[in-house]
View 1 (tube, rainbow, N blue to C red):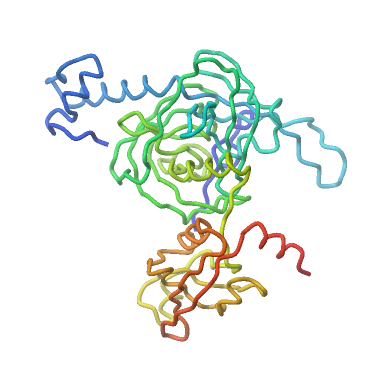
View 2 (view 1 turned 90 degrees about the horizontal axis):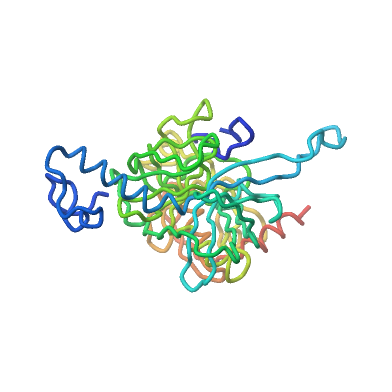
Length: 381
């Protein structure tokens, strides 16, 4: 499993580490160029056309991108004495949006940018220099998503939300944020991969289903938007894979469709409801282990431990089982399985196709409630 670094900006060091359909010769359809102030695209060189497109997208979205500063209490010292520092100053990025059915304007950012900071300890710096404070904060540590409500903020610029399910490998994207405290920085790249989950972020982040991009992202870019060539937010930049803590061309963004689902529950209920079965999965499932179990490919979720008195135990799951399918859907890896079950409503009955003793068996499970399950597991001796 690859280890990656979260990309918030802490002082002066890292926290841890589309084309539009049209004439191929001109890259973009003439109607797009009308939006850019020209009825026809330049005919001199394709690179000029692409540069004009980048400029239009950046000009459209950048006013809605904000820089965020959060003052957090310092962690207690190991010897129990009071911490030497009163607070930790952490910086990141965010983007101003509106959600369907909501009148207020919200900033989307990462939980790790604002966690443990109260509304009075969070400052939102707009692109025009205006400084605001959020009136309320919602966080979901498991997906690393946070929402800040901006009250009485006047006519704020808004970035439109796109559809991350439509993004494909090779689609061009822009990233906007405040790397190293340099506000309104724009970089470009492509979608390098989809549905990346085999990365270790540590901490509380459990729901991992990232868009991977090679757009340059660095400490301080956390919470900033990843934007398609229609000027829509399709991801929230969260982490980088790097030995140095700086850009190495491998970065990860939370798909905006996941953000929408999490935001909907946070705003309606104040928390996110997730399903669970009550088992521990292997962090990796390598080919040698698959062959040892009699499988011809390392595909599925390998069960390490089944906790007692859980939906998994009631269903009859055991250690060394490999979950191959859920309701007929092929499981690619353990994170795919976690995300699928987490997105299910508690009480739902599901069919599991399981590899055990070199043959396939079918089990039926009833999805439990993750928050209740966690309370039960913590209370068990």
